[in-house]
Length: 208
Image (cartoon, rainbow, N blue to C red; front, top):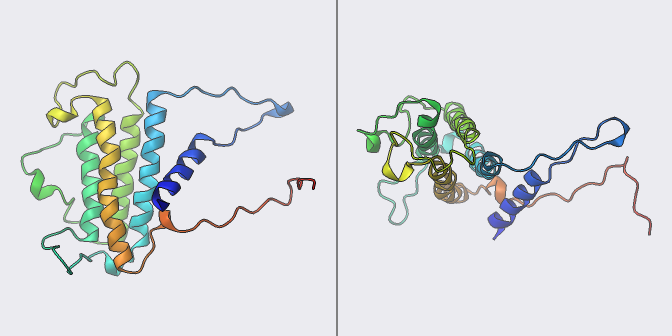
């Protein structure tokens, strides 16, 4: 429930960004939502939770994987993070001109083997989300369900399908990242209590 509440707060904040007032107190006209703006807002919430979790794990715990119980062969924390980055490229890359080879996808699904440090892995993750945002920005009401010529997989045959799986897939692995963090006594940033909002001294106080 805490994660759901945090997600709701992030969505409200993104949707209710403060308007900038021009000279004379005039307010610029609000832009109506578009397919890409709605999808990018939701994708941004996912990005914030996943990236903050990746940044919260100390570097010396990036090789951590559970051992108690039935966890044989599961990904390490580093591999979870790199897998999300790899999948972002797999889903969104073709929309941005990337050529994706799916012949060895199982072997390559844990991301580039040469990425070893936390800084390298987190940057790879951030860059993959940036790619996703750029790809989503190309989606319009006119092309969202237009069949793609050469989809990576049959179920990714439209831009809307790609945007949908690209948004929910990272959360599958975010759930595992959360467990890894908590097993190391780390509360995921998205689950931490938020400090009460401080009222600005420049704002007038409400009258009793």
